Length: 328
Image (cartoon, rainbow, N blue to C red; front, side, top):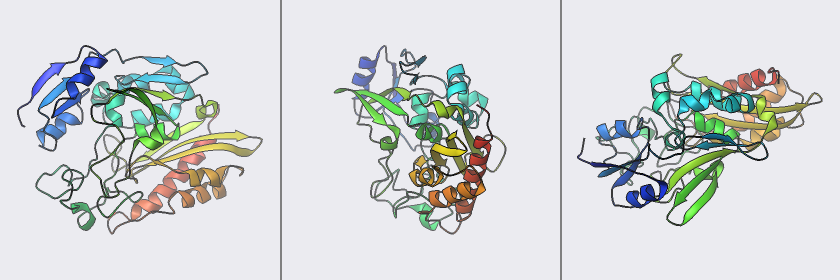
């Protein structure tokens, strides 16, 4: 591990000012960053510890939405009464990720910035365009069983690893970020970038911007929502495929729907095509399979991960089936 200095930030302005120094990075729960520092994947010269910042509240917003402070721990968010009753898909996604010990440390803001688990990104002896732009992508011609089939480019096929962010994408979450120029609100669908020619750029945060909160809009039908994750073992494994679904069923037809996929995309993957395939249809296998076909229509698999296409379709069909059966 490379030498670095450490300081705690007393307030948001102090944190933003300190991280403006060359080589400085924010430290929250540290569940990803410390691992990457040990591997020499990230080598900050200074860590700005933001754990003292008062961003730990989960509060109800006027109109029925919910605000989640950036320093709220994953375990606290998963067990929040507001989240469990209004947005169960988010609670289920959080509880499907990592281990209880990690969830007790990980934060909402940190989870939004979680880095990929691509083996080549984490191995500094191999080329990786995300870690070192222009060096090449070892995954495309290498072993890529866990990699993405949606949103890829010729420069990167790394999968976004978060469970929480898949649920947030289905829920139309808004990210609040504060920088030297003030605060701005970023819809989560605009927050993440597909790799294109610049896989090193993963989101639209400007240098020095601090995530302060995430807002969930009022979405009454999200009480009927569900997250399902398929992985190699029952716990502490990343998704091979996952689905976050919310359904508004009225009069025997699907009035509205939200569909997002995880484990298959270079970012949390919202599927508007799947939602269009569901709306107006009677809940049932035909509508669910049509939605799954629509969701994976643009998939570009490689030799080791072609199985993900059918796996993701079946995961979505099963998630829609279980969501429709929920009593709300």
